[in-house]
Length: 114
Length: 115
Image 1: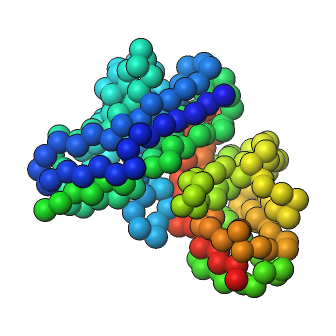
Image 2: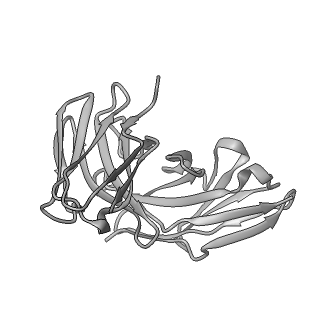
Image 3: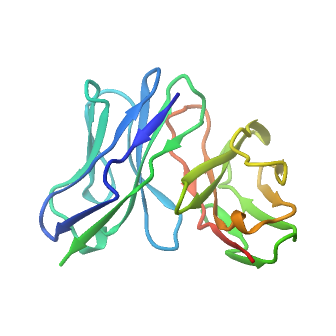
C-alpha cells in the first residue's frame, strides 16, 4: 500500500535562511512524487514533481526537491525563504502501477519569520 | 482557462438536510477527483472518475455519500442526510489523462458546516 509521512507538523525559519520540509514515502513500485502548497482558504497548488531521471527537481517559486531512492525521501528545499512562502505544504505519492490514486501526507505548516 | 470551479464556496446546513456540492473541471481533463479535508484526518480521496466513469470510490465514507459525473464538464457530490461530522472542506480536482504522473489542479473548495 502507498503511504506518505511528513514528520514535522510545523517548520519555522527566518527569512533569507534555507528551508527544508521533509517527506518520506512507501510504494510497492516506482513512485511518482509531488509537492503541493496550500494558502489560507485556497485549494492546493502544484509546485513540482519527480517522475524519473535527475534526482534534483526544480519547481515553481524557487523551490526544489531531492529524490533519494535509498532513503525513500523527497524533501522540499529552498535556498532562501521568503515571508510569502508561509503556507501549508503537502507531499504526495502515486505508485507508477497503481492508477491515478494519489496519497497525500498530513501536511507541514511552514512559518517564515521576517 | 478559469481553472476548476466549485460551488457553493460555503454551505451551512442543518443535520438531516441534503447537501449537493458542484464541480466544473478544466476543459479537456479526463480525470476528476473529490477530496475531503479536515484537521483530524487531513486530505482524503473520496472518489475519482475517468472519462465520467467512477474508477475508485473506496474512500466514500458511507452510503450517505454519492457522486455523479453526468458529462465531462460537471460533477456533483451529494450527502443525504448530512451529519455534523461531515463538516469539512471539500475539494474537487482535475487532471489530464494519458500519464499517471500528471499533477492535479484543485478548485477553491467548498466549506461545509453541518449544524
